[in-house]
Image 1 (cartoon, one colour):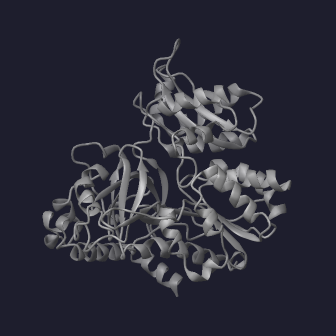
Image 2 (cartoon, one colour):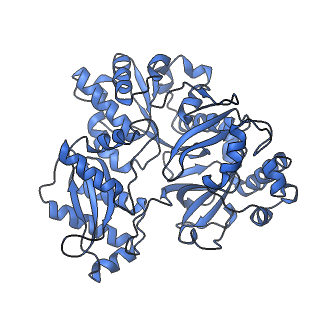
Length: 488
């Protein structure tokens, strides 16, 4: 019944989006934000564009501060159930509201991703075993106003349906351990004797969990330790660069489900094992707008509704939600692979790019280059990061790739050349810069094992939902990776 409803909504996505916009603006019409922005006049997307400008988190700060102080009816009627505390790359600590109306979006979408898999494949084996979700601590703290706050994964952990609780791991006590390395070790000890059938988390941290399990158990691979392990659920990053390493660690290919959760809302999830992309959550309290990525920083960028997007274009994602975020720029970029039904792929972060020379390389491009090159050279890539080298000691500037892998390629020059070739076929600007001798070919720095984890630990972001940006337009991360690798 749930899946039938989901499929029906996907066929009438534009109607659902119109309904969501009208519903949430009417509900919030008497809030401080609603009064300030004439929500009573908003009936269409054109009205929204007229009365509500695009905002990032900094623009919302005055309203968020009022909520933190205990004021009611600021962005959404009443006060939020929670504030989700998250570390922004440019905004410092952010507090994103979660409301009674928005919580079903987070819980229901995760459920629907699993139900879609069951409905399509008929495979229910994972339901009978133990499941683990590598996530932040479920312990909550409280502001002086009485509003609880914590990490998204921790908040959601407090709302896991009862029918999943009996099979859920780790224990609450273990899940509350703050130090990530200590926590993963404890989880490994607690789970290695269990019948694990579903494992979920960001790939880099799940890989860490696998490696600790194999070290402690002495087993050859994860399948030997967990013979009934049959489903991996992930989100947050492109899984393709990790796929060869996971196959080696697990000992075989297993089915995967990709999800796209964020503090601001559960945006999309993989509803099919055969169709490309993630199904957009069109009827879950979120109204979406899309700005062509190349227009994002222009004075008057186009703000497109779902009915105006096209396949293959890179868009910045904008959200208005029943948590009280309005025309909010989440900072991610997406590309549609299907319109009917609406399915997307996450292509990166609007601020995570490399364009020191006008090339505007995005995450999707470097991930494809790394995936195809590592596959050709039969290598498993743990992590990588790309940054510009604008002023080298000698010669032309270049893109520098910091790569952590299981082994070095026999021909490092051929590896770099293949990276360059794939980049040039994807990005015409990069190709022109190489051919025009503005840039020289990519330079690959193979860093020592553990470099990326050591970097994340040094900035207080080891584990949880944190991940290393694939790209940067400066060398802050790159220089630290180089320094750490020399010291390991």
